[in-house]
Length: 363
Ligand code: PLP
Ligand code: COI
Image (cartoon, rainbow, N blue to C red; front, top):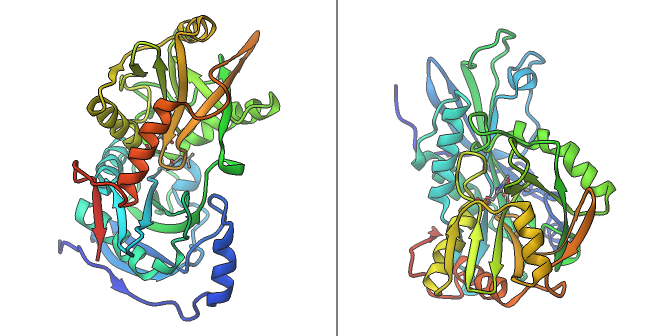
C-alpha cells in the first residue's frame, strides 16, 4: 500500500470576504466561528490512508447506517495555532496530540494515522487559513482533528472505512468574560469514563457521558463539573474537559496521577515540567475530596486551577457539593497559577525563550 504523507490542495471556490472575516474575528467566543477550509483524509481496509486533501469546509454526506452514528467509534484532539508578534505561526507540542490520537485510535479499534500525516494535515490547514488566526492576548486558532467510522454496516465490529478531518475555529477565552474564576460542582454519582474503559482516550463518548453531570452543574449555578473516582467517590479525578491542580502553602503542587482514570493532558504535563523547573514540589498523587475541603477550610490550600488547551489555566474560586460549599483564595488567579500561566503562554506564543523545544514553527 502506498504511504501518503502530503495533502493535495483544493482552494475554496469562494472565500469569506475580508470585511466579513474581520467582523467574525472581533469577538469569536469559543467554537462558534469556523475557517474556510478543512483537511480530509480517508482510510479503508483495502486502500489504507488515501485521498489526503485540503478542501473547502463543507458538510459530510453520510449513510444513515454509518457505524459512528450507531456505535460511536469516534476520537478527537484539540490544539491551538498562534501568531507570534513577528508573524511566525506556531504550534505547541503538536506531536503530543498526534501520539495521544494514536493511543485513542488503538483503544477504539481504529486505524492509526502516521504522525507525519497528522502533523502535515494540521500545518497545511493553518497555512491556508492563517488569516483566520485572531489577534489578541487570549486569541488563537483552535484546531480540531477528529476521526470517525464511516462504513455503512450495522454489525458490531471495528469499521473498515474511516474519515479523518481537521477543522479550525478562531477562538478567544473558553469561559465567557475571560473566565477570571470558575465555580465547580462536585459530582458524587455520575461518572464520565472508567479505568479499563475509555477514560484515557479522547473519544466523543466520554464527553457525551459527561453532559448530564455538566447540565446538573449548571442547574446548581456552577460552571463545570469535577468527577470523583468511581469506586469510593473520594479521589478527585478531572473536570469534564480539563485537568486540575492544587497549590498548597508548603510550595507543593498536586495533581491527580495518570492511573488510567483521567485524560493525560498535554497542558498538565507541561505545567508539571514548568513548575518543577521553577522550584515547586510537584506531586502526582491521589487527593481526596475530603482532603480538599479540609485544606481549604484550614487555609493550607492556597490555589486550585483547571488546565487544558481550551481552558489554558483557569482559577477555581468556589466549590459546591451536595451538602455544602467552600471557597479558595480571593476569586482571582493566584500568584502560583499566574506565574505558570505567564510562562506557558509566553512559550506558546513565542514571547519567551522555549528551552524545551515545545514550539513548532509552521512554514
Ligand atoms: N481532561 C479532559 C477530559 C479534556 O477534555 C482535556 C482537554 O483536552 C484535558 C483534560 C486537557 O488536555 P490538554 O491539556 O491536552 O488539552
Ligand atoms: C480541549 O481543551 O482542547 C478540549 O478538547 C476540551 C473541550 C472542553 C473543548
